[in-house]
Length: 109
Figure 1: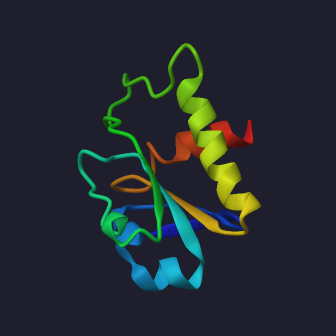
Figure 2: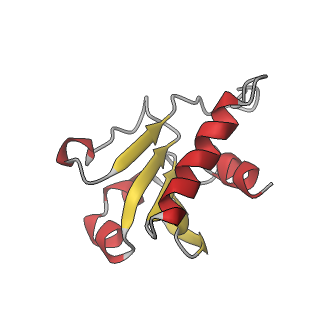
């Protein structure tokens, strides 16, 4: 499952992060993996996709952002870099419903 948020920005699940047809069709060259402990970066060894990976846990009390906004800056820079190079970003977690939505919302804020 994958949802287009805006041109060049997608939210998806683990399956979408492995779907080479989706990735090539949408010029996805940046993938933010929000569940790196559960989802491997399958195209990392090819060198054509840039990854930003986080080992975020899937429970309500888990804190994604840090007090110094380092994580937020990484997220914004990663998405912005893709946009400036006219490429697309896929932000994904296992199910594509929780951990991957939060950084995209933070990016827009």
